[in-house]
Length: 156
Image 1 (cartoon, helix red, strand yellow):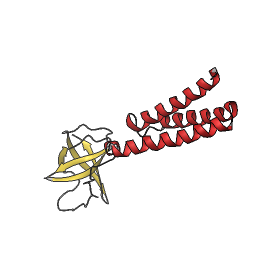
Image 2 (cartoon, helix red, strand yellow; image 1 turned 90 degrees about the vertical axis):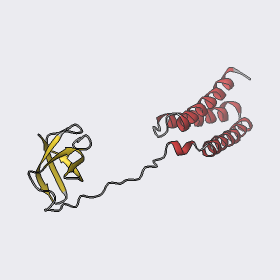
Image 3 (cartoon, helix red, strand yellow; image 1 turned 45 degrees about the horizontal axis):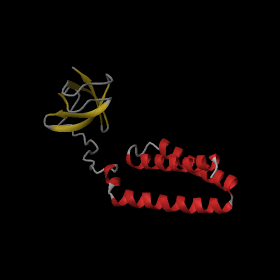
Image 4 (cartoon, helix red, strand yellow; image 1 turned 120 degrees about the vertical axis):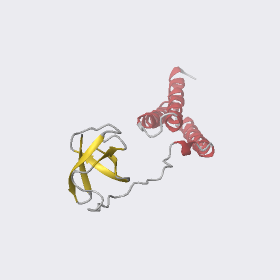
């Protein structure tokens, strides 16, 4: 084996390492995964052109087999459960009852308003919009405007 052959095979191995890093270390960033795919494809093309068709087909079959093994391993180790969203969304659209909340009411920010977040007014939780920009959690706030289901607040 000459130096170029070792270089192209090393490029394939490097591509697989990037592929594994994408799956297990930094899932969802895509940059590492795309770099791995580019490395593997370029390595395969160079093997076909520099080492011949027989070596290229052997490398291609090996790449498909290794990708299958990595993907199967990823699914069986349940690693995909670590990167999936399991939380349920409990938020709901504001139903503004004129009797319960009105302009001038005071309450507390339950979350940081950046500029949206949740606030408590008389024991009821609402999604509110800050007119002051960011408002920290547990800050006293006041309703300044209500437009449909949107409640606008300002810090006190």
